[in-house]
Image (cartoon, rainbow, N blue to C red):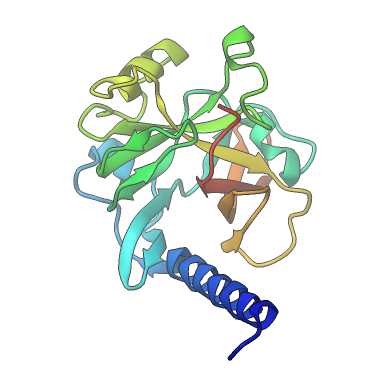
Length: 229
């Protein structure tokens, strides 16, 4: 018979292997596919998006499919690509996403399946949001049928109203963006920028309307994780 200490080690090892297998099963895979933006989007929005989808897959099934702008417009030229998010103006259209499975946003609220636009926003700097996130850069998801024109949402209040309509929380559906320290490496790639956070590291082309040169906009898009709720 096994001694009690040896039996304990076997039980611990079995538990560790089980947790490792669960972690592997839960990990999403990254793929970039040639794919036109969804027909659910208005043509004025579709025309700005790349004909490529950044996909996060569970096995061979897509969980998220992201389409990003061919060229993200900046309002000011940032000092560097790793500061590029500072040059964006809310609520500019950033891209679109098709959510194919049940997922939760950065506030740990459910995200409805279907096609959404993604608009850039800054977290309000007030007492209600103090300390809830490491960074104040976000994408706000709006159902495609609600966000019907490229410039159809003009301010933060309208963005929140459009995103929260139909939700049970009356809170906008949000995805966290995190700046990165370097513009080198492989893009896109999977990263874990913080504890319990999983992200896609992306590099997009961006341009300030008043400047001749384009820059690489580099950031992490957090697809799994939540703020300090």
